[in-house]
Image 1 (cartoon, one colour):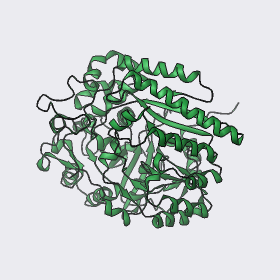
Image 2 (cartoon, helix red, strand yellow):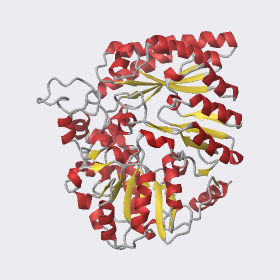
Image 3 (cartoon, helix red, strand yellow):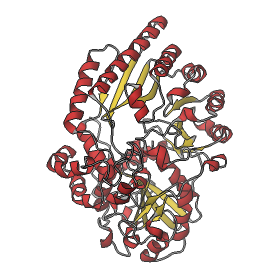
Image 4 (spheres, helix red, strand yellow):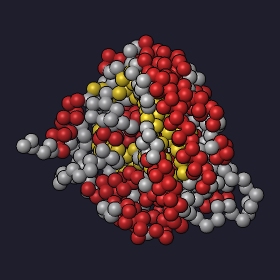
Length: 544
């Protein structure tokens, strides 16, 4: 019988398999532990995490090591760094990149395991400073304020040099926090107040790029290639930030606006340099095909002999040439996001896709040789009716028939995968004050869809559990008062039980009474509400 691999053995095996795309010295007097609050396979698939790791290690006299949260790993020594097996408590700065609200629980479980006092006011001079960055912190840092010393809000290229410069001053813990609090883009609850009352004009300004900066920005790309992720040995390259679509539910489109696009030649420069290390590349953006030079980029990568994967494809950007490049390299799967089952609801969410365009593009997809098409769809959107849900069924059936008829002509009948999520209201979007749909209504709609799609040949349904929608919506919009519930989750109480036992509290956040304040009775649906924004836990986050 094969012996069970230890955590140390797994770490050595993974380290041995890694290949760096840039030489990193990992030597420096000022040490940082950079963590991803989830498993290695997930953290190393996250381009933002990999990019910040590179940026820190480019800084003079700074050495940055990684750490991850491995589920079920029994290491009584506590969490340790990936590179040197050093306990986290020995690093002056422990930084975490949090991309998803669901990982808050892992963060809170991690600190006690690392013997770092959980509450920030209990930490002393010998304890690490706990810093959190990443998309989730940028959306709404309020839930984590009882435990996090510093939040870094914005792009790594703008914030990492400031962090490194402060560390090189060799200040005390208290003075380091004060120095970071004085820099743009940093939120220090102990000094600014839990709602940034003492910050400049009561606001913390996110540090991000302007549209014109894309011309000179180095394309963020993988620092390390590894076979031990779902994206095995794939070079990830970000081609743009933000999205021109501006769907009213999408945090990335509004919080990252304006869109920042990197020129094709700069992307191809990176691809040429790293081509000896891998033949696989993935292009990253909210809507990759929205890039105005997407075809020159794809042609260039194809000429370099890369197998290309796209993180997402905007429906109206699909073309015969784009699909031809993908299918000639053997690609047989694609994902698009119609979101809703009819034009009326798509217009309401600002999704500029007609039924006619959708059918035309799916016919083009099927004709190209794509045999698996994933559809990102939502239920519970603002203004949705039962008829709209039935239109989802009709839409999927129409697209299935198009895929089937085109496939039969070519001898390869494809599969349609409707991936149905519940609409979750997110901060910084025009729909931030909308209510999550009633849980019983969501379950009824999911059951209806599951039963309808089960009867359709060549259709594989995937639906979001309602309990997950409730928990994610709560995590996205809660404030510091949610601390007791988060602590229960960190102590291992299952989410299903938490949602059941704290149902009234959770519903009061995700389904608040009165979507539009009485002072603004004429405010159109999907418009930013300044009165509600001012009262929200994330009101102090500003873009300018």
